[in-house]
Each structure stands twice: as C-alpha cells, then as structure tokens.
Length: 248
Image 1: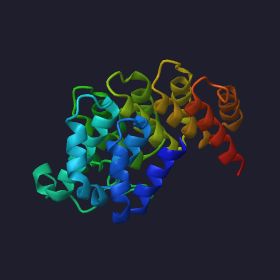
Image 2: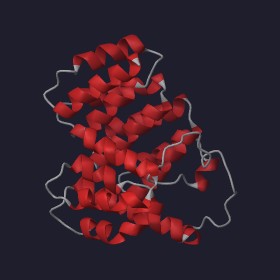
Image 3: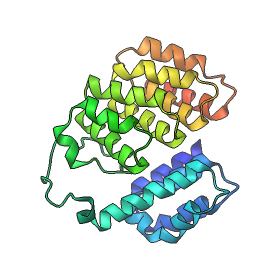
Image 4: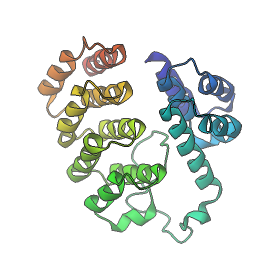
C-alpha cells in the first residue's frame, strides 16, 4: 500500500528524473500489480519517455490484466495528447463544463467535450457500457466528476457496483467518488468494500473514498472500523489510513 502511494506521488511530481524508477516497477513481474499499475499511470508528459516500457508490458500476456489495461490507457492518453485532431475535437470549444476541473489530480484520461451537451444519465450510459473502449469510459468518468452533483455520484456509484468487465475501471470509479465526496455515493462504496471477492485494490480505493465523505461520518466511521481487521492487509491498512486522515 505504501509503495503504491510512492508511485502515485512520483507521478504527481511530474519529474522526468522519476521515470527510470517508475519503469523499474512496471517491468518488475514480482512486484504487486497495484504498485505496477500506479507507476504506469503517471502523467503523459512523463510516460511519453517510457513508451517502450508501456508497449512491452501491454503486449506481455503473463502480466496481470490490471497492468496491461493501465498501459493501454496510458498509451491512448499519450496518443490523444500528441494527435488531438484525430479525436475530432479540433472544433470543440476551448472550455466547457465537463472539461473544467476543480481538482488538482493528474487524471489518466481527459473528459470529452461532446459530453457538455449530455446530462449525467446519458454520460452514465457510456460509462457503464462494457462494449465501449475502456479509455472512452474513463473519459465519461471524468466528465461526470467535473459536472459534479448528486446525479453524477449516483451514475458513478452504479458503475462501481454493476461493472463486471474491469477491476481497474472499478477502482478508478471509487477514486473519483472519493474526490466528489458526495454522500449519494456512500451506499455504493460500502457495497464495494463489503464484497469479499472483489479485487483488493477496488476495496482499498472504496475504503479511502468512504473516509473522504463527511456528511454521514458516523456511518463512515462504523464501516471503516468494521473492516480494520479485514483478512486483506491492503484493505485493513486503507481503513486505518482513512480513519487517521479523518482524525487529522
């Protein structure tokens, strides 16, 4: 858990000097897939220096699917960054509601300008469509986050508990619900955390997101304390961190 946070922070630093160390973790087949994923999700300006690493790990069948999917999304984002006109966005407005973000995180995919004229339910349909390319579903995810509000939280929550296609996707949805901090997302996050057969990093992200919600803190605290002794160490530690962060 700690090492995956190190990978996240290295990415947020946006320093090219960190790229060799990030690549070492991505390439290390013995490392936990959570750590490898977090390193591969560093911002495009950094990872454009690691194209060979991303492509190699994407095409390695023995890699965990979460690592391969992360590399795929990273390569898609780099491609979008370098050839924006290929995405039919050259005529999009310079700024629209779904493109403006009040968050300072470096996101793994950009929202899509075409979503500005859609309501949350319509974007939610794209988000939950398992036949849509994962990168485009990520774009819908961040469009919903930037729109914000109760309805966006519900659409994201439904994706978290209904999706059966990708643990990576579900973990990112949980992260975004934590950013929104909307109580409307709480039931979905609790359901995700309670699933003992869910991937550990989905449950980890759900626990941290629960810790970010203040409007029903008594319930949040009860849930987090209940899972502090979870058999999955990553989940138990995430609950501990969430409670400590709330106390702080």
